[in-house]
Image (cartoon, rainbow, N blue to C red; front, side):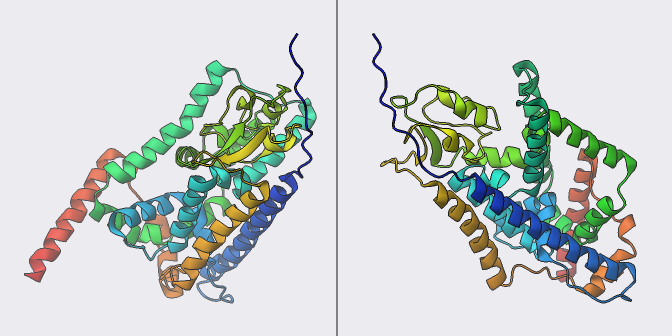
Length: 367
């Protein structure tokens, strides 16, 4: 006869309310940044006639491609580009979060992730359960975000020379990419609106549809998260195989079938740890020697601290505000519709050739 396991109930307080507060505060911060950026753009629209409001540096965080390019320039040359430096430091903080606490940005900070969760919760109330795609469809769809990431990495790392990368970041297009982004949403096209609407509806049926299948930055952070020494770990001896952790996981990870959760889909939301009914059966632990348990509240403190320390460092060192003057913005504003960027292999090659010729000409002029 199989001996019954002695169950010690898990009485540890959950962390989901704290996580919701962090998400809400960050979402409110994003809204505030949006309001400030609207006022800044209104100043540009009136050609300087309206009251001037400073451009909020935090808007750089909504320029993921420019931020990634600045990140690559930084790790290859050590240069902090002056166009959108806040984006670089926000990106660095997100990467650092992933290396320490897994893909935690997605579940603790990301405003898109937060909205997706709320929409997913709404869907679960309607259907009374979480809908999951069959494996034959889920796996191919999940690969899409990696294909998008691969295209981004290939374009920046392999198609662009270091000179071309620097030239692009210096270009008028990149300098006003924040303003162009604003007008993309302020005067959104019917096609874009339909796409967003479709993603919204799909997120009601399939929780976090964008995050799970299409977000290239989620894919990148998932890869970084695999390097994190801190993982969700299950104690098979005390586990009662209740399956609550599986049901709680928004990423459909089979937590109850592994000792250590090693997955690029795990966002360290700690839902599974919260619902586990047995004390010390499911915990966030370091896989390093000693295997110390990490208290859930330290995750909250940790992710917030990483973000504040990295962005605070940028502010203190003068690398938060960009170096583009309001006069330059006013000048670019009148011509920004004519600014473009490379969209294919041929255009990237042409950019490399043009920049190389310009560099050669500069060297000749110096001689």
